[in-house]
Image 1: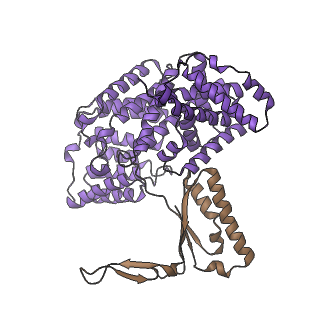
Image 2: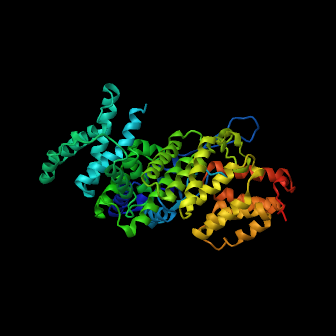
Image 3: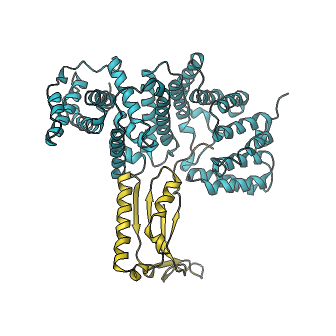
Amino acid sequence: MLLIFNRPGFVEELSEDERTALFGEVDELMKELADSGEWVGGEALVDPSETRTVRAADTAGAPPVVTDGPYLEAKEHLAGYLTVDCDTRDRAVEIASRWPDVRFGGRMEVRAIMGESGTEM
Amino acid sequence: MRTVEEVLRALAPQVLGALVRRHGAGAFGACEDAVQEALLAAAVQWPREGVPEQARGWLLTVASRRLTDRWRSERARRDREAAVAHEAPAHDAPADADRPADRDDALTLLFLCCHPALTASSQVALTLRAVGGLTTAQIARAFLVPEATMAQRISRAKQKIKAAGARFAPPPPDERDARLRAVLHVLYLIFNEGYTASSGPDLHRTDLTAEAIRLTRDLHRLLPGDGEAAGLLALMLLTDARRAARSGPGGALVPLTEQDRTRWDRAAIAEGTALVTDALTWSAPGPYQLQAAIAAVHAEAEHADDTDWRQILALYRVLAHLAPNPMVTLNEAVALAMVDGPRAGLDLLAGLDGDERVAGHHRLAAVRAHLLERAGDPAAARAEYRRAARATTSLPEQRYLQARIAGLARNDGLARNDEERREPTP
């Protein structure tokens, strides 16, 4: 799974051309991954300001407490993810390094997904 | 009495082979689509009207017509179209897997699907579809990817074969051996994909083991003189024989030494053992035969304590000499520990730390942890188990490793499994 972290609202600060280029690159990358048979899925997330955070109550037995806003105070937030099925980890890293958010101060995390397959130990 | 689906799946590679032989590997993609359409038509019609006497001819006729229609609609390849129109495949001889032409076609098709221009995942997908006769949807389900993704993978594989200028002909003699290894490897991958899938919710994936065994059985029938094809079939049978015993409640993994051996499939063990025992008498030993021989030694022990570890160690040593790779060394270390004690195994593992193919691998940490535990060093064992649990991408393996850590913590430093320790006999 490739996790996309970026600063919420950074797109609004870009010029029209930069914005068009950014979305165009994402479309192109997604098309390439679909063509190569590596695309499995992905979602973009709504702005972190719309987040609800749920945690246990301080009083034992009380229902969980729900607050507005994200769990972590941070400049960058998880903005979305994509899932790819690649032959190697290096290939997944290569896809991540071409994600345009990286150029605009964002970060991509490449993480393997746990599977149900296992061998006799 | 074979089901319609079994008949269809057995005939699929023969019909596709005949079609590609007629039209060339450049038309492989179009032929494959036409065969799939013919299979669909048969799957609808035959259960209602019965399987035609000339089943193979029937499929070939329908597939040829689909191909002609397609090319006609493309208003291209008039010369080819004329050639197809004049064919009279209805008079084709009855299906007989042992006719030399069919046999060669089926083999050539396998070689084509495992073409070196393709990645392993494409070879697997194409083999399952073109030779196994599975639908794209079935393959996608087995590999847990969307159908569109799998369809794309298969169509790209076909385009690549075309671009590589592959011909529908047996590989040249100097390439044949390497190409056959690739075919065996693809069948092995298909088997493994199914076997390592937990027996839990994903029955679609475990179907792959049956499919791999079926295809390897066919290959062994086509190449009875190839020791490695026999060895691979034996390895699959002997491994699959343990399926019922290898997972406990909730899909938890049960290690080989702790499995309930009464649940092993004795018929599969007998067949696999006979196959590999026979192959080793007339063939130079290869990696699959050796792995099958090791599985047969495990299978012949009624209890884990009866395992002939000396023989297993000897076989691993031959394997390490023949096809050195870090995973073989790992297994060799386990066998060595059973013969000469855990410290001997740990010494052998120490040599793998510099091998980047395996240095960070969870299996290395897991085996080392196990040997440390048996050597009476629970603190070091715990650290290695933790390392393994962090590195694995498999949930059942992680559960197993976490259970070992918990067990060690509970025993608070007492070495467990003392009964497992083997003092070398003088």
